[in-house]
Length: 307
Image 1 (cartoon, helix red, strand yellow):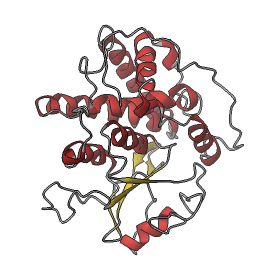
Image 2 (cartoon, helix red, strand yellow):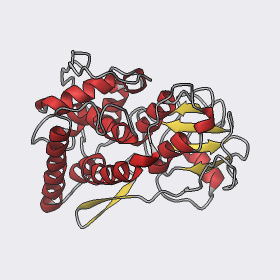
Image 3 (cartoon, one colour):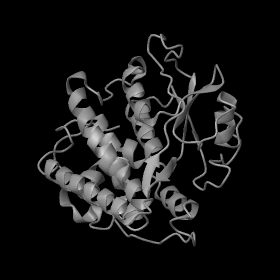
Image 4 (cartoon, rainbow, N blue to C red):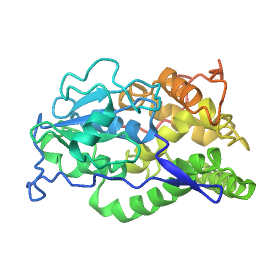
């Protein structure tokens, strides 16, 4: 999940190796078909978490199957608790090397396996959710939300860019910095954006009003991990999520939606970060806290679309 190297004390994320597209019309060579693709994820990984949320919100559980790796990753990479019944793999690396025998990078989640062609189609995490939202539209459940409406796409994309750079990836830039200036720049940018999001969410239900969008899906996994991991483990400790009244209520509101709360596994999250990332936490000791009540009332009264 780290998927990066450090340059001059700063964190640089590894490029995605597999970037083919699944398309509704099949023009890419990878047609959107029910039962053809398997989504491989870790409950610990925020990039994978967003794909699980969208899959459930859109009712794609019977269209795209899921394989879940163990939260503890060692030098061999992500491991399936049992051999994956669809791909037959014990380690995610087997699927990467079956698709590209010359691959030498980190084996990352989420990624999508083509069951028919028996190869990875994509590990391009920014595109996986929008593919589910657009190219798999014919398979969406009745009443599924439009998470990426055409009229809002430029605004959603612009906000997502800022949130990715300063929040989603910003916590990693802080946590894996080995230079004081790089660390401080990342933390200041992170909290500047959180302050702006707090103001934006004061008086509105979601980031773009009263309907869920892709922007909410991309922000939530970082918020869900913030106090449990990023505040202490990654030294993002100017403030906690719980110190932001609007952001904390918003996060609990999303958590109350089954697609969000039902895919949030705090045990996997904490064990992965604290046990696997020994360069940050050499002892591997997993903290007991924090004690937070994600089910506390949040009094956000605008009707929502459940999923």
